[in-house]
Amino acid sequence: ADSDYTKVMRDAIAFHNSYGGFIVFGVAEIEKDKRVEVCGIPENQNIHLQKFKECIRNYSGSDIRIQIFQKAINGKNLE
Image (cartoon, rainbow, N blue to C red; front, side, top):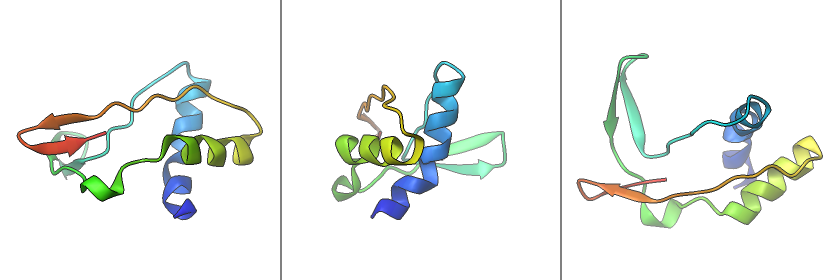
């Protein structure tokens, strides 16, 4: 849903404005600002890059460069 993208859209725009950064999906914070755990994301919940870019364009009026990489760690998918 578009609302899922809007939750992270502001972070992506902020990274763009500060010349880059990473957002990792598939990890859970175990101890605030100290420890995370790889929990993975279900295969059917991958980010649709074009849809996400469109949401950002509609919100900000600008196109920003975004790349999505997929990685499996211990059999759990990250994006």
